[in-house]
Image 1 (cartoon, rainbow, N blue to C red):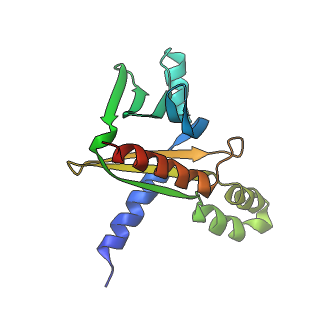
Image 2 (image 1 turned 90 degrees about the vertical axis):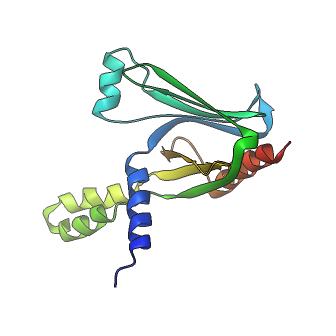
Length: 175
């Protein structure tokens, strides 16, 4: 019998990996810098981002943690969206840190190595991006998910992800 909970978790995590923003800026500190503890900027890659740029729409989104709130700014064809989440309303913080491995690249790459294209697919699999998914659950039970993919130009390690979660949790625990 197939475990449906496992399948739903697997497919939702795959969806987050595919829909993640590519991080263009990553700064965090346990002491605030310009009032911010965490500042992550990211944007979608591909045709949508290119089209927004051509239409003079900022394709970047930002995730910022302040002493008393979290600020999320996104841009769309309709306009800018600003979401403010008060830190005391955050009930739990979860951070997923790992590598985005597209197993299909490895599998097809290994099968097609004799044809030459397999080497490119295997190298693509080896140079996968680092994923950071921040999940905040508020006291009402709503989950806010922020997925980011990091290239090798922005250095992030697992201890960085843990420190971000600790900072958010510490700020949300203050009265």
